[in-house]
Length: 170
Image (cartoon, rainbow, N blue to C red; front, side, top):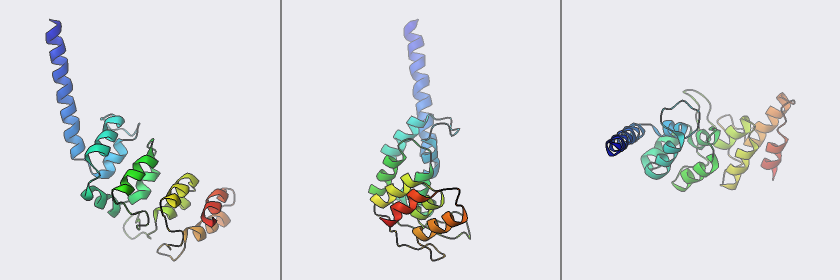
């Protein structure tokens, strides 16, 4: 009797795993990145999504799709534990640190570094600079990340951007 129960349990687990892998194989790369974050509402456990992402995705098509969308900014803005490790893996696979990001149709373009400056994320700024982000690259309005940080600091003095500005001046 116990063997049958155990066998049925193993069969159910195998079917569930197969369904999860099938679902993940049909996810866009952005969905898979989000699925790898705990608490984002996906039925598939975040650690399973993360392992699938790391071991079975990140091919050239995925890199191209991510680059055409939010790029490295999307990965870094996620709340995923280990987002820097994930970002490094994407960079190693060819994701461009300095590529333009267009948040939406008709929006201005900027780099992942600009995005980190706008969101006042010194840890992301430091990571991007360590991985070759170009501090001199202007956004579509001609402003460098430092100019954006200084403008935002002036417009919103209550939200200190001192650390971001310091990193960009080094």
